[in-house]
Length: 296
Image (tube, rainbow, N blue to C red; front, top):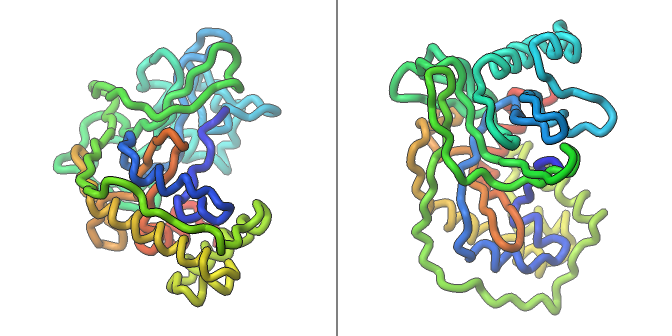
């Protein structure tokens, strides 16, 4: 099972998942989302014991995109369309440590500079990075059988830098003082079906992309229920208070459009699931419109 798309807490309420309130107030494992690209998956293949690298496509059921050697990279990728990706994977084959298990990391860049912009955000290191490659690991996969049966969990151990690899694994502390989640009355709320929620998320993303305020009026036009709008806005407020209370250690300075921010966002691993906290007005708008992989 690959590392699935993480949900925003405000989107989770659309279908009536009120446990999201408990999740936001839980003492959870926190990590900083790094805005790297591409996502690199590497480690020891559980079925043959060989070291491999690739992208998230290593979990593809139909097409084998696992690379054990540099020759595999040239066989499986078109140099004309994937030259930059191939260059990254070759560096990873050469320099990544042969770890037990499987790890997913965001690629930040190659050594020799102190400023990197792998996607939307720009990272400033205090000194020139001397290591060959820089990655931000965040997920560990485990399985007792096949690669496709892998289960994704947050990487909680810190990897050790060496002469070839600089690992970026910031630590996040929280000083949020609220003791328990608010009591919410959902009797008058008309929640959405899965199909309706998917349409609503697309419409909300379009508002963000167009830099339109997520006002009560605009959200009502999409959600059709004032009570659901109120719950959505409440979660946005709680989320923002949480993010404002987070303290980040061990991260390079981070900028979007020249403005220093804490980062892309945060990941909370709770007993209710894994959720992401992103200032969508600040980061998502920039990502939609300036990100490396935006559609032209």
